[in-house]
Amino acid sequence: MKNYYALVAGLPNIAFDDSKITYTIDAFREELGDQLSTSDKKLIDLFFFKFTNKNLLDYLNNPECSLDARGSMSTEDFAEFIQAAKNEEPYKSQSLPSYFNTFMYGYMEEKQHDSISWEDQLASLYYEYASRCRNEFVSAWFELNLNINNILAAFTCRKYDLDKLQYIVGDNEVAQAIRNSNARDFGLGDMADYLPELQRITEESDLLEREKKIDMFKWNWIEDNIFFHYFSVETIFAYVLKLEMIERWVTLDKKTGEQMFREIVQALKQGSLSSLEDFKRNNNK
Image 1 (tube, rainbow, N blue to C red):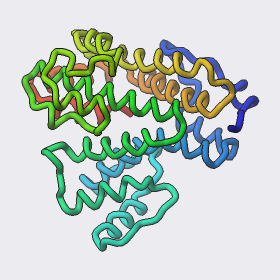
Image 2: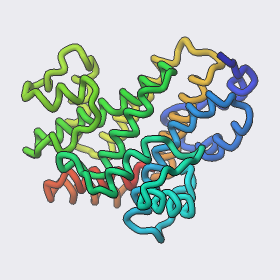
Image 3: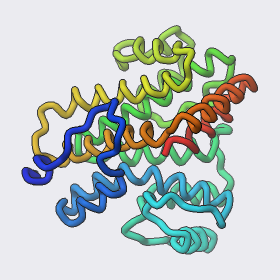
């Protein structure tokens, strides 16, 4: 295991309530450059795949769209990738995670399982892929996020009497328990000791405040689970996660926040979980 003494020691201190951005996650990624080992760089790349995911979905919807620069594939890359899928040919690229091919084969054959959206199907493949990585901290982070998303979706479905099977993704123990149980705790028992805290968060009436509390929950989890990692890639990965949270809230100015709030409320008034989730995905940058 490689240690990064100088790199970690030189990182500026950051806090959840910081009102200024030290630097963006994209700039931090550039600064890392060749300082990371090949295997450690792949761990950082796992985090950035979520932007490539969104870019792929946006491109499939509109090939003329503007792509998020934090993704790892260009418009030309996507065009070649999709053409290869149409020709049933393998597309090999160092910047392409293997689950992309699995998703595209299903997309081309229009195999949309159990009415689950394409976004959720891609997310499910992403979480499964990332959770299989050999780094315990990174794997646990992705499983935590999968569980949080599924638990929050389950509470929302219960509140608005929606079919939870259309919104639960992945196939880990938590996902299976939620799908198969109508119990008050979704049959999670001791599988998710943070369930009560997530339930309290869902009861927050201020929706922007609720989003911030979810991020604070994740921040605290990072702090608790990174404590015994010193000068390691886990520390760097955790720093990227924290930077993104700060970046998202700092760049969300008051006007944007008010607009976001109005649109979330409108989605809820329409009783549309899919509209709410689509909006959150589009604004969670």
